[in-house]
Length: 288
Ligand SMILES: Nc1ncnc2c1ncn2[C@@H]1O[C@H](COP(=O)(O)OP(=O)(O)OP(=O)(O)O)[C@@H](O)[C@H]1O
Ligand SMILES: [Mg+2]
Image 1: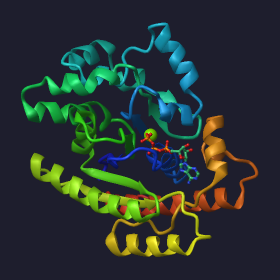
Image 2 (image 1 turned 90 degrees about the vertical axis):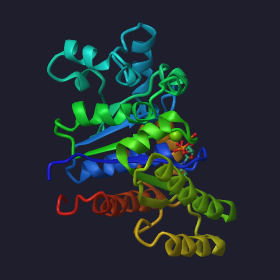
Image 3 (image 1 turned 180 degrees about the vertical axis):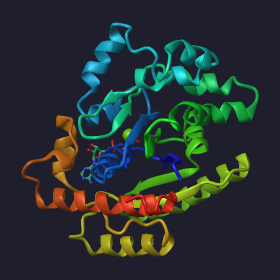
Image 4 (image 1 turned 120 degrees about the vertical axis):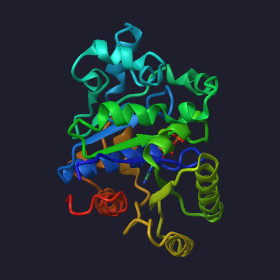
């Protein structure tokens, strides 16, 4: 099967590590010789591009009106006409190089109004499937093995487009009583969306993030997540790592660090191991 595998980072909550996870899994997959495309639908602040240190130059293009076409253009009524005019490979005009393996379609200020613009589309199938159409018609025939989407930390029409297009959620979860509740809410959210839209959404990967195993409670929570999500739980957790935070601020992932700390090394191993669960769940076993 030459199909491009797809998954979207989803959790109806901010700050659990969706962007960090998409960035690191993207690089981990690239390390395993996968061709990876990352797409930032998470909002105009451009977090995924920032994570790779390429937001500054993209922002300059935006200011100089040169960031056209961009991620919001592909949701446009006129996209197929625009794409025809762009020529052979319109996706190439959207993509920037992360410098760490994956390609990236960065966020754009146009994402700001996209939710309400999608809301104005009467036909619900059309409203939720615009992004799927884009991936089906323009991305699938390219050489990418995996497409990972970063979504907003809330459920809106853009989020629905990401889940509709991928049918696969990957979710970083933190450890704590509130988070355990969040995990239940996640399953309920996904079931509700699947039911409303009459589609199946698989939870492909649950990745415990920012785990501090110095506390015995963390171990307990890890066990409860394993029991709750036996098929989707990653083989190992990502520890809390100041190195990850510092690296992100410098515009690189933990894979780029020359002298990684113990936690950063653990995190790299965990991301690499998590890609195996992800690929298996997305049906790509045998690829690596
Ligand atoms: N394992 C980790 N160790 C330490 N810090 C982390 C870890 N994972 C993520 N962080 C930090 O936590 C913060 C939130 O992470 P991130 O931006 O990835 O979350 P998010 O779910 O994408 O948030 P939002 O919903 O706002 O988009 C960032 O500062 C990030 O660097
Ligand atoms: Mg984010």
